[in-house]
Amino acid sequence: MRFFAYPQEMTSTSWHRPAKASVEPTNDGDIDLISLGRRVRHLRKSQGKTLDDLGAAVGTAPSQLSLIENGKREPKLGMLQSLAKALEVSMDQLLGTEPPSRRAALEIELERAQRGPLYQSLGLPKVRISSRLPMDVLESLLGLQGELERRLNEQLATPEEARRANAELRKKMREQNNYFPEIEQEAERVLKAVGHTTGPLSHHLVADIAAHLGFSLHDVSDLPHSTRSVTDLKNMRIYLTQSQRSEHSTRSILLQALGHYVLGHDTPESYAEFLRQRVATNYFAASLMMPEKATVDFLQQAKNAKELAVEDIRDAFAVSYETAAHRFTNLATEHLGISVHFQKVHESGIIHKAYENDGVNFPSDHIGAIEGQSICRYWTSRAVFEVPDQFSAYNQYTDTSVGTFWCTARTERSAAGKFSLSIGVPYVHVKWFRGRDTTERSTSTCPDEQCCRRPPKSLLDQWSGHAWPSARAQTHLLAAMPQGAFPGVDETEVYSFLAQHSPED
Image (cartoon, rainbow, N blue to C red):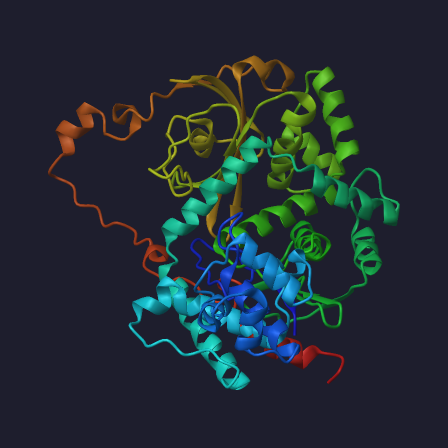
C-alpha cells in the first residue's frame, strides 16, 4: 500500500536507502561488462548454441567466451562485431543495458553486489551464478544484501548528515535566488483548474483543488501521532485532523500533502532527498496560497509606493507571518531585484531556519551549516525578544563587518517556545520598505568573540569563578535518530491506521 506520511517537525532525522537493481554502466562511456555478458549468454542459449558453437562462429576459444559471458573480460571492437553478427543482432542491441529477462536482471544485480566493497568486506565466498541457481535463492541473496546495506546506512546517518544536507540545499536555493519556476508553473496549472487568481485561498477552494486532483478529504481524531497528515494513494484519500490546529496550519498541511502528489514524489532514498521534497512541497503550498502573478503585482505596487512590508503580504493573502516571509524570499530577487535574508531564531538565540543571498555573514560550522548556530545577540532577530511591544514589527539597522543591513522582525509562540521571524536586506535596498525611518541601530562584529561570545570585562572580573550554572539538557542531541522510510514516522502505526480506515474493509 503506497502512502505519503507528512511527518511532524523534528530536530534530527536519519534515513535509509533501500537496495535497488542497477544495470547502468558504472562509469560514463564504459561498457557494462556484466550486463553484456548476461546478454550474450541469453542470446546464445535462446538460439540453442553451445560455447563451442559460438566460439567457432566468432573464431575464439570457448573458454574466452565464458570469460566474456561472466563479465570478466572486455571484448575488443572486432569481437563485439563478430558476436553481434553470429547472434543476429545489432551492436546497439548487443550493448543495450536493459536486461533481457527478470532472471538476467537478478543475476546482474547479484554479480555486482558480490564485486562491491560491502560484500567483499564480509570475507564470504562468492556464489557461483549459473542457470542452475534457483530463482528463490537469487532473490533471497539479494534480499539479504539489501537489508544489510539498509541497516548499515541507518547506522551511518548522523546529525552531521542532516546539517550537510541542509547546507547543500541552501546553496542550491541561493544559486536560484530561492525561485523555482517549475513549481510555480505546477501551482499555476492547479489554480487555473479551479478558477482562482488572487486573494486569500479559502478552505472551499482548497477542497476544490483536492477534488480536482482526485482526492477525498477525511477529518479523523486518531491520526498517527507521528504525522500531520496521511495520504492513501491506493484509495485517493487524505486524512488529517483539525483539532488543536489553526485554520492557517490545516490549510497549509493539506496543500503540502497535495504537493507530494502533484510534484510526483517517490519514497525518498536519502535524508537530502527527503529535505528537498519537504522544501518543494512547502514552496508549492505557498505558491497556491499566494499566486505568483497576484503576489508580484501586490509587491510591485508596494515597492513603487516604498511601502514593502511582510505583514501586508500576510494580511492580503490570509497566511501566517512566516509563510508570507518565506514567499517574499521566493519572489523578491527574481521579480523585484532585491537581495534578501530570512531567519527563524529561537528565543535561546539558536538558528532554526535561515536563507540568504545578500552576503550577510550568518554563523556556520566547518561544513557551512548554520542551523543550530547561535546568532549574534545584537542582530534584529535577537533584539526583538527584548522589545516591550510584541504586536508590532520591530525594525533595526545593524552595522556588520560585511556591511549595514536593515531588518524587520516579529515574534511568534509555538509548542517549541518563542521564535523570531525576520527579513533583512542590505542598506541599498532599504528605501523600498516601510519602517526604514527607524532610529534603532546596533553594531555587530561577530564572528569576533569579543562581540558577544565573551562577557564584558566588568562582569568577568566580578563573577568569574563564583558561578556554577545548571545547564538545560538539550535532549534532542542524545535521542536516538528516527528510523524508517519517512523519518520519525512509525510505519506500522500508519499502515494499521490505513487498514482501519480503508473503504475496502
